Length: 194
Image: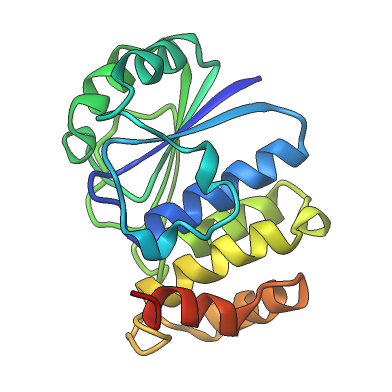
């Protein structure tokens, strides 16, 4: 399938962690995958595997638009309404692709054909892990996927400090470290790199 992954404006650690985690997973499933962001994101997230393939709509609007138009499936990650992705939202709304929303924010807008939304989840990255498991593909989680999802969970939980950090979160993180996530590298890259 031709698959596009989109996330919100001014992407944070969870937006990029979940997007690139899903990107690397879908590549392992032999799909043609592109990750598109509305605009740029912090340099401290640009170590994530797949970063060099991300298309910024603000820099390449024609390319992004063409990919969205041709997509069979569009995954919408870490946002609850199309207005949160700026001009990309208009393109996604018009697209004929099957749309899948994976998100943990309140009151998701009903623009997608399928929704995996859980406001009790600590992050969209955790939900992407759950999605991969539900697909029966936990064994496909490698170091690239694990590093992305770990970073998303780490940043959205403020280093595992917020109330939505549950026992399930710690089980997921343990699985990700077991699959090769480099927790010390993730922490240093995000918080100790300027």
